Length: 419
Image (cartoon, rainbow, N blue to C red; front, side, top):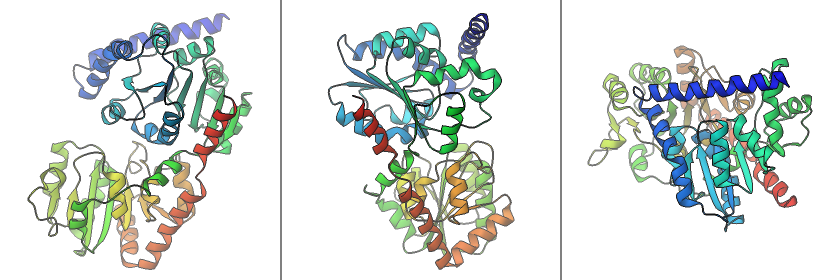
């Protein structure tokens, strides 16, 4: 009992210190500043939207990637609980800024810092009939307060690793928060096994809801006139969510390889003007920016740089070969399922072992990992020059997507069965 009190005390003191530090850092960092200012408005926005007697649902996502992962479930519940008010919270500004006007929620706010006071205040206002957390971003005080109030919560698309504190000898207190969820839906059997090892058994291996999400993209209108004008009938390589270490590969390749018949679309993860301008100036071929495309000749350019957000999932539909950033460095591999659903081969960097979908697609020979410029040039040339291999590899990726759909149906079936 004393150990529990001590650990909780340390966590809450650390959280209070973090809250203070974030306010200081906000003076120097625009992204942190957004989060700090946004959290100051959360309770006022909630009070203005939710009235006494309202029935509510609460969806929580760390950032944009988790939102996209949960979206098929959110949409279904939005329709099913049409008379409920839905609260969507984000921890990260990158998720909040892009989806603050999403139609799946009545109100989108930043999740307050995880203090006992904030958790009580938040749940006093929201009092959700059902709470859904996506994948991770599990906050002890919020989850403990949900459990203390006997409020229903589930975790979807969960992915656990043996190295996480929940499964270590010192993680006894932390693992308790997992028991705030009445049911956990995992992406794989390994995660279920880890949960069982700590005596958590209300678990279903449903798979990853992102497979359902990206499959929905096939039924959308993915046409972009400016991309069609740029691509014409030429082979097109799309590099999505790139970081500087990814962009160096393309800069060297485009400048050194004599391949004028191939078009390149580069969509950086960070669309900072100075960084993009620096990349563009080093190119030895004609290029165009999305922000400056008006009045420009799209056809004559070889490189199209997408210095905006929200278009990448559609742009992938024009790819003959895709490159997905994040794994060349240590920032984390971005969504490889988005291009895979369009049946194209994919190239990534070498740091992908935390991403089961990448491991599987590499084993299936639909995805290729590179660690050097030479490997990148060799594999990209191989895919560009050999149409049969390119098409076969792409088909393997699409087959992988099709064979892993169904997580959303399983989650909805569970929710329906226990109503």
